[in-house]
Image (cartoon, rainbow, N blue to C red; front, side, top):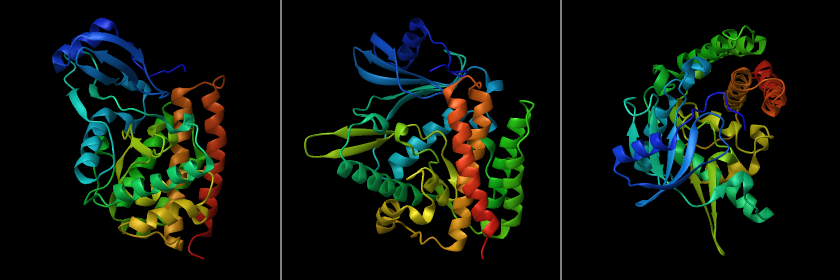
Length: 329
């Protein structure tokens, strides 16, 4: 896949990174994963197997919330390991000094398994995976904070202020490309309209990117295990935003598999109240705005990703505005 942000990294530079980390001499390395943002390498040294992740060099071609996002990713890995029993890779080494390489990078544990979107599963196994993702999400949401927003963009005292800033940043990102977003400004209008609801939302650890490509599946003869990777887009905010990606093509009140598993262990159950539906609508609307902005920064109209995002945005915006327009009626 063609990427506008992934940096080129030479074998010599990779070896220097591993020398600094005292993780051995490189025996082999190869590019890894389907991601479109960072450069990721599968690295084997005489000391073990690792994953090297390197952030973009040019910050002019990335979205506002993506600035220094890798530093947040390392933080969120630590949060998950400290506060939950969810399996994530261990980070062996991080370097944000730009002395060895002119952008941030870190080295982490190489996990077994294949990305869930590539795994061959039976219908029963697929259902278990969806339930397990819901349980993992509930565990994430038990981790709380008294501030809101992306670490890299500054935190706010309530969710309304954080979400308003997040939406405004994406609108400005789009405008920097010479385009305009009527739907983004409409979402901002609704944030003002429902600010009393948003101000009362508690802050949870929200992954906001729990799609199958960010989940590894380890399948044995009689068991399945899921491992979460790439928590870089996590923020402190409304837990309802994570439901945007779970059973993606369904609205909140139709996500029966997800809600049943989630509510069994959740700190606060989700009952699809009118206020929860409004909060969910902001979640899918915000995801649509992210995808709209990414379209301009990642792709051209000749790229599959452009049209994938166009169709996804249409679906998400339509359903978001339908709920927000209906309101508390």
